[in-house]
Amino acid sequence: MPWKRLALLGLCGWGLFHFVIAPPAEVVATAIAEHHPLPEAAPLLSIAEPPRQGEIEAAPRRLPVEGLGVQVVPRATFELTARVLSSREYRLGRDARLSPLDLALGWGPMAEERVIEALEISQRHRWYYWRSDTRPPIPARAIAINSSNIHMLAGDGPTMAALKRLEAGDRVTLRGHLVDIEGDDWTWRTSTRRTDTGQGACEIMLVDSLMVH
Image (cartoon, rainbow, N blue to C red; front, top):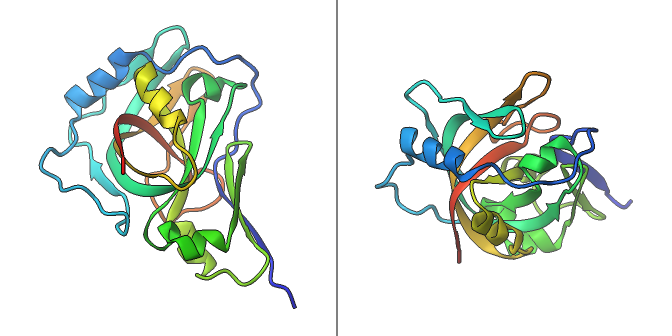
């Protein structure tokens, strides 16, 4: 009997329609990096390792994004080395004005060619989906905790352009912060756990730097 599974990982998009203007102002990323710096002496993560997340010791600074009526609130330092499983741009919605790109990323067993080739991976509506027409090569739980759909923010155009150039199969190291987005009538919260799935399980990452391997 064929074994089929359809899984969704991540956070649904929002039904508000606005055209993309720009990523958050560079001053936001600069201020976060200045007041909540990344660990400087930390060794580069291998693709076999899970993401590294660090606590923010000082009270997080709420940094307004000019013209959008929201604040970026850092929740943790965050870095990972991963395989790009899929990439999808978004142009409509208030969320897309801040984060016009989602990357589905895999590490550990979800960065292995044999596993990726056995899965059909797609993205839509700010969700990440995987599907297998046969029994997947690793358990569904292992797929969930070793991959994620991450909403990408950048403090400047060149960083976002570099993120948008990433393609499925690329190996990349990303360093930055997990952030919440807060407004008077709208809140978008990041996940801070790798073990959750479904609604609210996406990370929202403000990228400070990236390296393609």
